Image (cartoon, rainbow, N blue to C red; front, top):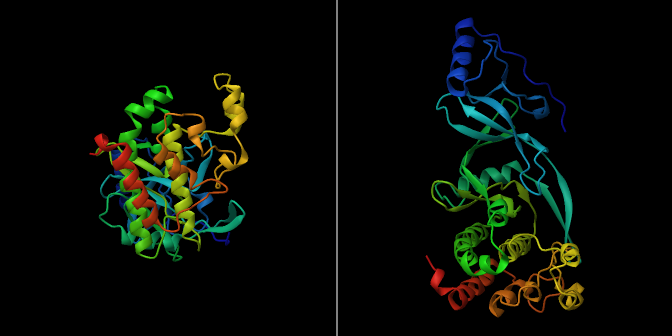
Length: 336
């Protein structure tokens, strides 16, 4: 990470300090000191703490804390470069994403894909989807060191990751009563990714916790677009994981199935390596072996995302066409 120094408290007139402190108290209810530390260079984001004020293009935001990783039960791992803030002008809650560069490789079957974080790419996507509520909304503001800071509107609601596993029903009842509506709602999500692809960009980090269910509208909305790859297939295979998660009512792993005394030895012995997901080989993609009531057309879609598929989707257009047909044939009564 480039070395820089967090801006020291700006020497302002006492009345300006008092105004800022008073405004923070009004919005947050905190017992806030009139000594305000204003940050105009966010390069060293790991030194920014609760109570600091980020000043971006003469617009002030007070830091309430960091965002946390919300999946897999890891509630104690903060994303130190992402902040919960309050806009001191409007009082609205926002999320601020500072510049964080990260690179890593992931595997889809035998293929290795290089992934990297790009604040600039996320800013371009935010510009592209402005006003489209299938996506989070926000804008890029440059700090004093020209870091591309994304200021994001806060979406109140639960993640798709938590929502699905939070439905307190056995799988059969879930499949019959809840899954049809969920699959139809996911249509908007898949169409949204198709829109990005038609505009020569991608989501890049499609995950079950990157779909938020808006508490006001019930709509499914994509968040977090800063991850990038130079392979459009990454989004396509990632959508396969979303469908698998929905159909399986959560993550269905070989390990858990083998440990489950409620699963017959016949089913356990029928599982082979070819039933695994290409993206995460510990997950079972051929879910019909576990849940025989899954419709053939739906399971056939899942088989496109196995480690050795007989056929696979080359474009989002192909995936969507198959998805539409599957819904119309197997879940027509759930169409909104």
